[in-house]
Length: 143
Image (tube, rainbow, N blue to C red; front, side, top):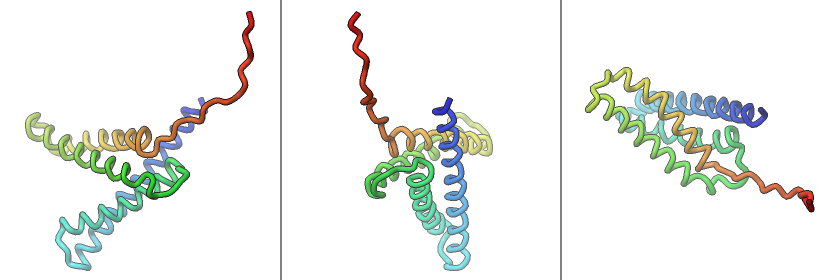
């Protein structure tokens, strides 16, 4: 039961970091578009980079509470983020193109599938730490 509860709270922390990163992405993009006069695409890229940094630090320290150096996980995190981006793009393309699903429904589906996939990538690969081996003494079974 404790493991299920631990996982629930990990998912809750992951969600909080994801929401904060999304708000940072959109806010920074709007700010640099409106006040620095950059194009919407450039603004989105700048917002993404800011959100990437917030997301990485948030998941490193808060969601998964990893010990170690930031640089030990950043490459895997970047690969995981790239996989999520590609999945999101391909999923929308497949749903709205060949499958002819309404764009709004495709975006909702993507908004469900991608965060779940992103959590699993981060949990099982990026920030994965194997459990410490059990070193407690074992009873001898002579019989």
